[in-house]
Figure (spheres, rainbow, N blue to C red):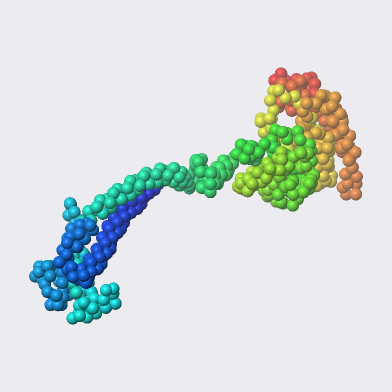
Length: 569
């Protein structure tokens, strides 16, 4: 039995118990009320009879007593009405109309004790109430009993009156009242069930859904979402559970992502689709170089001038480690400022080397305040992403180390293999420049490998200074370097090669109190103009380099087919 059925059963049982107890209580109270009313009526009749008999005695019309009693009986709707005398009164005034030997036990007991007695006899056809009330002598009443009953004293029982009356009508009234009560209770019962189903059922369903969702989450399944029509505190609880479910599902997903770029894409997806943030930018910050770069942004900010600022020290949020809110002060951060836009900037530390900054723009203060309300939830997402991103940064760093030359910081031959396999296709045009330091072995032999390393590092700096960001400089092996230049014609390539050769030749190196210079030999091949295959173009650039070294060194040579006579590569 589910929780909903259990709750409804409990409600029905409680309402049923309440109804039954109410009916019983109404019946008992109505019956007691009828009995008390009848007894009060009996007492009133007894007082009237006593006063009437006293009046008959005073006026000497005791022979009219029976007529008086019969009238009282008829007018008061009493079935039985008789007056009996006590032994003392019989001795004083005689037997009266009732034989003493016809007194029943109740009457004898009332005459003996002076206490009234009431009995109730119920049958299917009638409800008979009998009341026997004693007359007690007193000199303080009006009239004074002792003025006539001279042989009696204060407190003596002078006689009693017995009345029997049918209170069947009261029972009928009670049954009618109970019937009405039952009708009202049934109506209330039905309404209560309907109200319970309407108001309690959503809570019970929410409880069942929460239990199901938590059970699934305990097993590692965070895909379940609690559905509820409630919008009060219970609805907020459901929403928070759904938020937590989404957060942990996000965490479970990114833990299996193999790159930080894919994690950034998922963060952007959450911002746009879960939080409905239309304008945002996510920056990756490198604290060692104090540089930042945009890794994700909304479409409207793709060409925004705010991305031109790459200096991390100018980012207020990163510098202070605090949330930046444009509503706090006009142009609180000039780096993020944009006309007619409000903004929030949230810093998130990933490691000692890397951090993230999330920039959110709003069209007006109200929208910004709404975004500020969800900042804690966004923070939860990013805090869960922090350790995963830190691991990806470390993996990226280790991978870069394996793909970079430890001495120069340039990419190595392994990187070249991967780059050609993944990034190059037949549609891209590029040129290959193979570079070699002339007579480099003499440097190592004459001055030692430390000086040789200095020469190689200086050449790597010259190469980096003369190529643009999309080009690649690679240490191909030993003193040999490879440069890949993209979307550049030969005239530009030749100018770059000449600049490299001239700049390096001007470098002076000191060793053992001696100063020396070195020159370069450079071979160039174009893809696909000189070679139909990528590795063939690299080979032809190497052939051109060999030609430069064989023909005098310190020169630039472009590959020609006659330099390589084999038919196939």
